[in-house]
Length: 266
Image (spheres, rainbow, N blue to C red):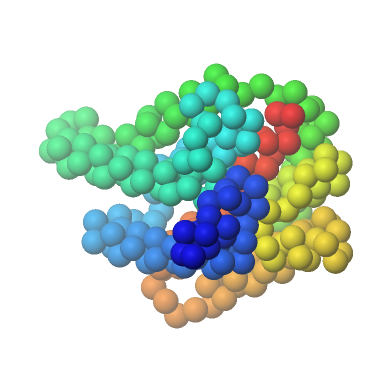
């Protein structure tokens, strides 16, 4: 009975769709991972700043890119390990290992003239992963590639324009985070509208079935902007606020890259 439940709700849907039970379970795992990571970073006294963001950036791109390559079963990415969400657990541990290695190297070189800060180690490791992915990637659907790029560019212009006119309404970091989520919305819209793809996640799939793919734009803007505003207005410490924003950025950018490259490599 339990084996049938696990197969039906978790194993069979891998790489195809999400069940309600799977969505709830993965959501809980995400929450626990976020809490654990937060405590670890506090323990290691890692600041959530530009260096931390630079160290993470290549791994965020790698996660979405690898998931897209898995859809096309290219290279070593044919195992269910690289399905969603297992691929993100894999990338999480690779990123964590790179961070810990970077910290160790930083401490070993701390007293030398050529101190190597932890994000440099992460950048080198992340670049190597991206370089491998680049050897497997072949963009063949130029309509998807160009149309998504134009849409994303438009949304970034809108958000950074709002920041320029009303900086108190939308900070530059919030504009960047919103742009990452509209990257995801733009890729989803093009994939569903022109290429016959379907939304895998439960709630967006339900809303799209009622209103159409365009609903992803107002949905992302309203929800993400509201969450960012709540974070800014909260009385929590700066470390927690920045950490939560990094998590929100990852959720948008990784999925956006995955959808963008999946449809562009048709």
